[in-house]
Structures are given as C-alpha cells and as structure tokens.
Length: 386
Image 1 (cartoon, rainbow, N blue to C red):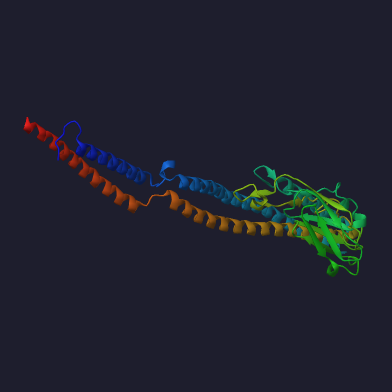
Image 2: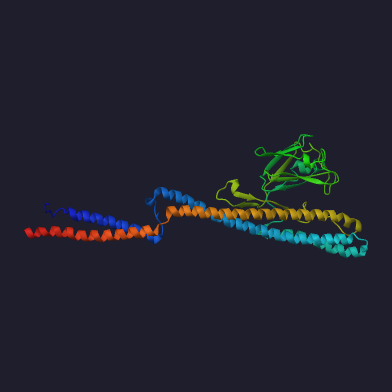
C-alpha cells in the first residue's frame, strides 16, 4: 500500500462515516425529543401531506363534538322552559274546569279569571326570556313558514291547512300537486319531491268532520296538518284536490342550524326549528281565551288542550333532536379515535426503534472516531522515513 500524506484516504473515509453517524444520531435524538417521526417535510413528504389533511379533519371533528354538546345544552334550556309552560297550561286547565262548574258564581269567576290571565302573561314572559347566548328560543327559532306568502296557509279557509311544522326543511318555495280523487298529495321545491298516499287518512275524499290529519313529508322536513269540517281551530276543511297549485314558502329564520360535521356540506348540519310559543302566538293562540263566564270557560278547554298538545309536540321534537345529537357525539368521538390512530401511525415516532437506532448510531460514531485516530496515525508513520 503506498504511503501518502497529501491525501489521507483512510482519514477522509473515517471523517465521512463520522459525519453520517453524527447526522443519524442527531436525527434520532430529534425524534426522541419531539416524539414525532415526521418533524419536517423531508422526513416523509407523502406522509406529511396525508397527516396534515388528517390533522385538519381532526381539528374540525373535535370542534363538532363541542358544537353538538352546546347544541344539546341549548335544547335543554328550551325544553326546561317548556316544562314550566306545560305546568302552567295544566293549571290553566284546572282553572277553566273550575270556572265551567255552576258551583261557583260570576263573582268567584273574577278571581279565577285574574289568576288565569296572569298565567297567560307568564307564558308570554317565559317565552320571551328563554334565551341561549342572547338568542331567543321560544319566540320562533330557525326557519319558518310565511303565513302571508304561503297560499296554502293564507287560504286555509278553503285548503283546510291549520298548521305547518318544519324539521330541517330547506328555505324556498314548495308547491303542491293534488289531483282530485286520486288520494295522492305531492309536495316539492323543484329539487326534491315527495308523494304521499293519504287515502287511509281521509274519510272518502275529505278529512273526517271534527278531526285533523297530518301529512308528513319526512324527506322534505315538512308536516302539514289538514282539518275536517268543524275541527277545532279550523276555518275550512280539506277535500282531495284543494291543495293543487298551492304553495308553502319557507323563510330563513334566526338560529336553528347546528354544525356537527367537518365540512360545509348540508349532511354535516342538523337544522331544527321551533314555533312561536308565546301565549299570544299562532301556535298556542291563548290571547283571547277567557274563563270569566261559564260559557267562555267551557270553550277555553278545547283551546288549552290544543295548546298542551302543541307544547308537548315541540318538547318531543327537542327530545328527538337531543337523542340525535347524542348519537352524533358518539360516532364522531369514535371517528376521532380512529383517525387519530391513523395520524399517529404516520407522524409519531416508534420509541423502541428510535432508541435502538440511536444506540447503533452512537456506537458507529465512537467507532468512526477511533478509526480516524488510527488513520491519522498511519500518516504520521511517514516521518520515520525522513
């Protein structure tokens, strides 16, 4: 082997190995210090792209869980107030029953009416003061049906439509197709259409006198209550074909949309709507109810019973949405767990592997240092020839 001093190849090779070992040791120390396998893009460019997308999704999903929990709290506030409204209505019914009896005279009824009127005012006050984050909940929350623009409602004296309920219905105009004598009722907005066969709900071609039926367009989120002749609260009755060409206009209201998914798609939102539940509103319609006379007290019973039913229905809707939110929270948390596991498999360092590689790198570094000393010693041997 030639003996050279200008270019000590063995020393250069040893230095090269020292540099490589030092780089590896630093790399593994960085991973052990941060706990991450991917600390910068060059560590795993493809893995970084995938994991960053997962991190963005996880961030959204965690916020979605919080949104759903807060939505549940909002609904509990509203439902708690309606519980008290239900109690008030039950007391009002007791007062109406009391005033309907001839065991008391008109002078006594003045005292009964005084309490009755105070309770009506209290229902209004409860509805107006039930808020969540400064949003009123019981005076109309979410989308609503315009009573003036909706011809099916505005002409209820001929269509027999006494109530329209919404459950996550889209805003816009919905038009009925109602051919006489075929028992089919179709409602659509040009994008989504649903046809119901309401023959089983009708008495021949009409709604039975004194009763009402509900046409539930569940795919649209719209429930239409149709009344028969002389039904409570109705000014007209429905006959098969009456709704042909009539429309419902759903207007956007305040609130009512809960974001429970990671994107802006409608499938990641839960929409709810509550009617105006003031005593003076159309839903309860107790503003003109009186128990000041035995006749008016007897008439009040039907109105109070209808109000009790409507409040119970609204509470049922709130409970159903709360159950849905519970399911949303459960499956979102499961999704978070699994996506987090996938993200961890890409980004997180395997500590056992990193410690092993660190030990290997440290040994190689020490060995390379020792060999560099030996390589330099060989060059020194050239002095012995001088």
